[in-house]
Image (cartoon, rainbow, N blue to C red; front, side, top):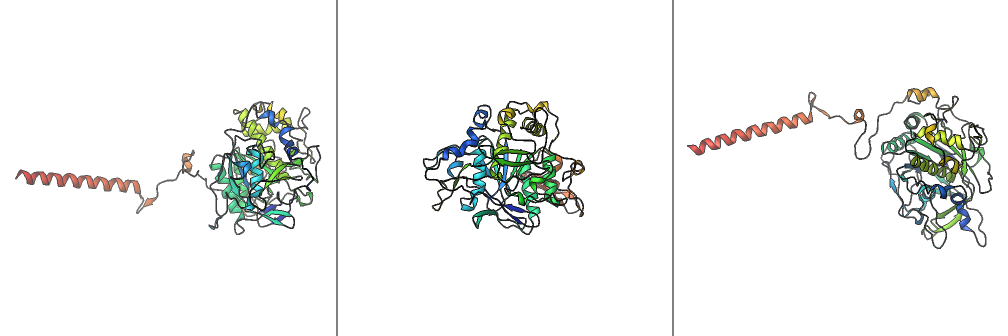
Length: 431
């Protein structure tokens, strides 16, 4: 799966699933497209955990929850369905433009049911909850596909709103499979989410030529310090044009996956075997981390990341990082057999020379030449807040008398008037 770039002020969209299918054979072995489930230890891991109790925010295209692979999955829209200026953004949709988010979600929570006589897609963490946030629709362009930018007038504000809403609605993890640039308010929102213990998993571009150097003022999400930055490998361990760099965290299955496309009849039942794709390796990693989080509920998110690093292929026995493979290839059986609580409660992916800097994490704000960007807290959809300091306060009225006090005074006056009227009536009757 090739992925290209279209830059805006704060968002980079990546090429997606469509146009990346391998050439059709006379008799395609679609079952072989589930090698990532059968050959990596995921099936065995699901005897221990399914991701139940873990909430994953998929920040991608809209998602078709009625697609065969997702029927019955625990998926719901996040609390953001419009741009800061009010322009609607589709979140749950059966439009063909939902194909990328639908395919990504299937890797996490696919139901495993056959589709039109072909094999189903069993998600890595079918018990997890998926929150959907949309970065626009999947548009085919010259044999590749792209996510459009949903809010070109304020992409950073939109990303900040999405991140804060996901955190407020209980997301344990944020998944980005298209290339997003974070700056100013959006960078602060993402930094604060990571600092609060939310795991962020992001895919690199599929074309190594598109891996730009880290920007000190606007890093890409896959290069953002503290993020699980993902690259892919295929069923034989092969890698197709890999991105290399100091930000790379882990290499995971992401090539020759079975997926289902809408097809010309929009039945969402057309099977394809996809080429090398970080958009598939990324949800695979997120799903495995969800299994670990359920299996070891006492472990902190940082300890789960420590375990990912300490059990990857380069940990023999101590973790070693390289620009070519990060901390190595994910080892599902070893990861599931390791209790994360033995490791330090520190994010091992925050590098001293990374952007945002460790000092920015200490301060809780991302700063560039324009200065800091503190953000207001966001409460969940139901208005409830676990933070009393973040709860809304009564609006003042007039010279500062709270509305509630005014209401109580009016009610008291009504009661007094009623009593007076009753006394007068009784006195009149006695006459």
